[in-house]
Amino acid sequence: MTVIDSVTIYTYKLRLTSPIAWDGQARTHRRGLLVCLGYGDDSGWGDIAPLPGFSAESLTETQVWAEEFAREILKSPPRTLDLSAIKIPPSVRFGFELALCNLDIATRKPSPQEASAVACCGLIGHQTDQQFHLAHTLVTSDYRAVKLKLGRQSLEEDLNTVHTICGKYPHLAVRVDANRSWSIDTAKNFVRATQNLRLDYLEEPLKDKTNLVELARNCTIPIALDETLRGQDAEKYHKVADVRVLKPTLAGGTYTTLAHIEQAIQDNARCIISSSYESGVGMLGLIEMARNLPEEIHGLDTHKVFERDVFRVPLQLSGPMLQPEGSIETHDLDQSILHRVWHAKA
Image 1 (cartoon, rainbow, N blue to C red):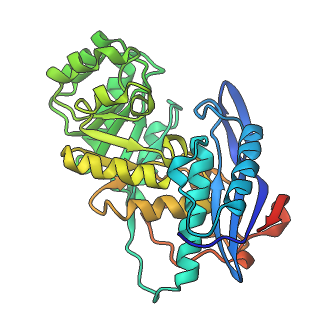
Image 2: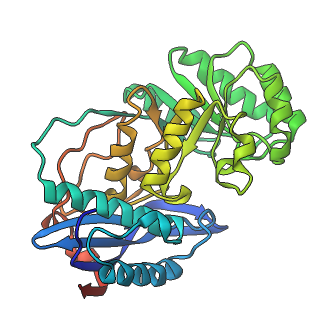
């Protein structure tokens, strides 16, 4: 384990290009924490960004947890800290583990290598008047896959959207996310009505997850699970998930996600790395994890919702292929939007 001799915590607030409804509220900004672990002149940065309505912990709570965890790190003897043995909220764990990974790279100073590009799936939201336009825009921008958010219209309207986009763009990988909105009968009707289409997968189709096993018996579309795999009874649904959608900020951090990937490979299931509207610091960590699954097209299309990022010079974190390179240096970050709230040395 890398030695740590200082920890600094900052808050950030990033304006969105348009409001997004999280936790039943229209939000105009994304708020989070950046944590910087230091050793001598080297530093490693991580992003702590609980997502309202999805994370159990609030931003206020994460700051309390982060400060307490930072104290534990600084008082632990060098190379004896076991992150897995300490209970902390998922977003806090992701931020500290990402910072630790980045600090380890900074101290080792490995020879620069060209980073491989990561394929990104375009996201088409629930706005019914924009779905066809967004599909056209993404296809003309060379996206090879899109994810359609369904479930807020009638089944007939949803089916019309899916058939139209699949018919117009036959070479596009179309993913459908019903956001746990359908009854099992509605889901079965959707599967029957799309059996002649080549959908990439159907994500979280059911209100009642206990019916997933029944749906899977006769479902001709691969089933993807996200929220279900973060529940206390997740293990019983692993066999249903042809595709496992992993959100490290919500699922418990970097090392937990890598363990999920290893398990999925053993189970012959696909894995998709998915973002939770993290800042650029978090996105760089997600892209690095996605490089462990080079054959997949990942759910990393959230960064375009920000007017600006935490970096002084914007990184290319949007588009069909993501290929940011290099480590994060302190001078890369825009200090005008970072507010230091905690600092201590060993």
